Amino acid sequence: MIQITEFRAVMNFALRRSHAFSSISGRDFLARFQTNGDQLTDESAFNAFSDQVYYALVGYQFQGGFYSANLLQGAQEFFAQRVQTDAYDDDVISPWFHGVAAVILDRGEKKGEGGPTIIHQVGDGQEQYLVVDPFEETRRLQEQEALAKKQLADARRRERDEAKKKRDGNEAAFRQERKGCKGYPGYDETLDARAMSILSTAGANNVTLDDIVVMPDATGLGVGGNPAIALMLPETIDTIRDVVMSTHYPKLVEGKNPHEVNIDVNGWLDRLKIGTIVIAASALDDDFGLGVMYHEAGHKVTGEKGECGMVFACELTLIERHLGRPFAVDWFTRVRQPGYLRQHGLSTQPGCDVFAEKLRKLLPEVHFYKEFKQVYEAATGKDLVLSEEAQQKFAEERAALALPEVGKTVTGKVPALLSFFPKCEKSQQSIKPAGSKKGDQVTFAGYTWLVENKTPSGEYTLKRLT
Image (cartoon, rainbow, N blue to C red):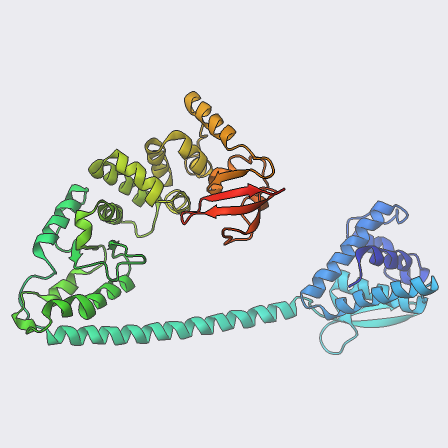
């Protein structure tokens, strides 16, 4: 496509031909671009004007304007002609200029039939232009895309509705077969009682069998063997009920008559409802499992479905109260990774400010400053200032991890490393390319590095190359 400097040369010639000013004055044209039309000889004013015309035509072209594409192509040909002959044909350049004016001033496309038209004087005659919206094709494509998305969404909804209808039918049949089964409505009455006691101690009021259900294992409770989950969505309830019907209950009654086993499976299914916490039996004897349970209790106590600040604030309080401060510090540094906390508890309302203050009081001051300063200030509206002692420690850490010379290394996670590049541009604040591994050459903070090591938790050892 023609370059902007070449386009300026073509416009410069066209605007100075008397033929081109027969009805559309150069001053009016310039005025539409807020440029002084009396100063065509002023190079900066002319360049500003021609640049705006150029970019307007380019924009129209990208938005589907077919005549704007022709005008740009014509300008390229005119420029090539001038290079060869050092002249332009007035009979060619004047209509070209009027075409530019028609597109820029009136959004008109060259000669056409049907629809509203506009008339421009060209020399001693007139030319008719069909008024066409250069963005019409873009809108048509957008409407097609929106329709396609709607059709896809409708198809997926129908699939979900059919799947839901089928599973509900399967559950109804399962329940009918086991209607009249007597016994306890769950896996283990003793374990449920322990779980209810823990939940009650956590602050939930009037805890009943409908509040927490212990399962034989973590099947269906989430990705990575998550030992507990709060049922806050209908589809999650369906998933856990399906696990009971297809896995847990069949194992418990294997080789036996269901009516002779002391399990009321329909009552078990009924307990799985909105707000119920489901927990694996092993989690009751494991600090990590209890930590997850206290997080799920945060949903129960606050009534919040999402991973918001209020839930994490409740989780922190319960873990510190029942599992101790050292465990809480380890939990909110090792288990709850800083990036996860920045994305959820410290950025998802309600309660970000409450959680931010609780987390600040829990974690080591310098660690919190390096990992959470920006999100803390955004959540609370307060400036995070280090104490004198922490400032000294932070300065020592910065000195220890100062920008290494070429050939030396630096170690840390990206947020911590960024604190040593306070003037680093936003585009340079990540290690590129993404997904880099040991042995890769990457860029970070405006420098080139070799990845000498990368831990599963995201800690890098980088060797500076430039």
